Length: 247
Image 1 (tube, rainbow, N blue to C red):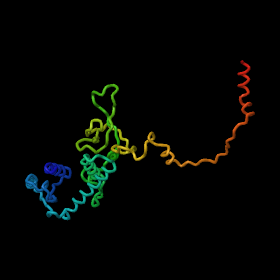
Image 2: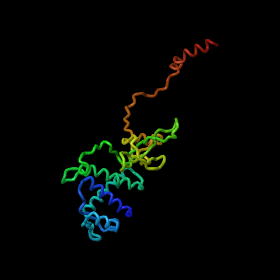
Image 3: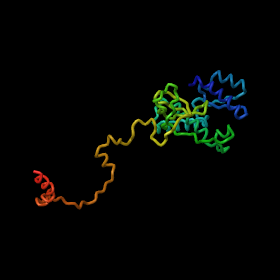
Image 4: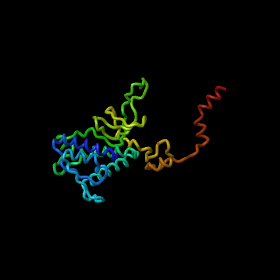
């Protein structure tokens, strides 16, 4: 929220100063109240940061930030639509998009990603997964019992900020959890998809089955012919002998 923005900005500035071993000199923002407030003004003055703001209703002056924000929102929208995730997870989609872009978008001036510029090394991307993918977090509760389920059904929604873990929406408890003990099933349909576009086997009619098959029938060479009375007598001759002989 806007009330939390000043504290988040101050924390980020302190962290980036330590990581880059270089002070922040200038900050450019718009005239939003989340940036133009007394808390940030006092902090900027205390550390010697110059705060430059764009004119009111002139986003063109803040084009770099506006373009980055547009890219972020469009990517998050695409992820939500593709995974069919509920809209209350839009914050998780934005956070996951930002996390991914900071590790993939290459800065043309330095030919490196933001992650490489800050940490001085390339990232192992083998731990990345598809947003909204079906997964099975381990059920590590103490009261699971001998016959209890060892895993739950969940949806992958992002990465932990404070630890090396995945953020999973647990469908059973309807809460977001962080864990590394999880199995992913990214080959299946998106976990949030409630119904498949294809009819299920048990609900398919004969017409649906036939319409989905390309059947070619060979011409029939068998002709129907009624047997004669003599042929029937010959066929059942042994049965007659056994029956009448027994009588």
